[in-house]
Image (cartoon, rainbow, N blue to C red):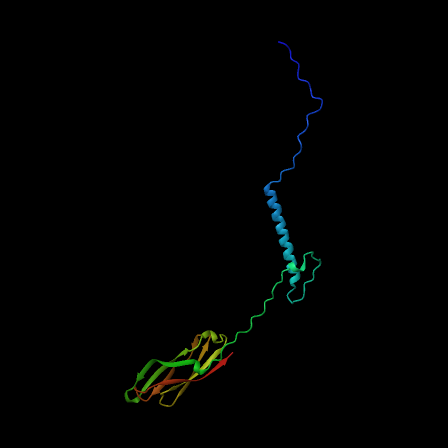
Length: 188
């Protein structure tokens, strides 16, 4: 066997592979885009706050100026105070009244002692009544042997009725007892 000579060496060193552009992963692009969006939101919020003014309506003082054009600024609408609600006047005609007998004690030909309570109904919408007012509803009970009995019930919070039961004495057990509203006053 013959000794074979090694292959000759080239005259120039082998060329290095060309450096390729570094690969940017998609994750890095998403992080950069998210950071840019957050920065834009912070700057936009700062512009709105700087232009909206302080609590007493005077423009807020800004230490720096913005390069954003005026047409891109967001205008914050000022809330106007809610006007005071207007409630209807309440009159005697707005109610119906009946008497509910809660007790009766009769003494033969001497008559009866009858305890009655008002049963009031408001004819309108209770939302039209001022919830902060107390209404005094005066009514007159007929049928007592000594004459009409005048009493007052108080309506508050639109639905709460306070009254004192009335005790009347009738001439006989057949005496018809009736009632009518004579006036309504508002307090408060």
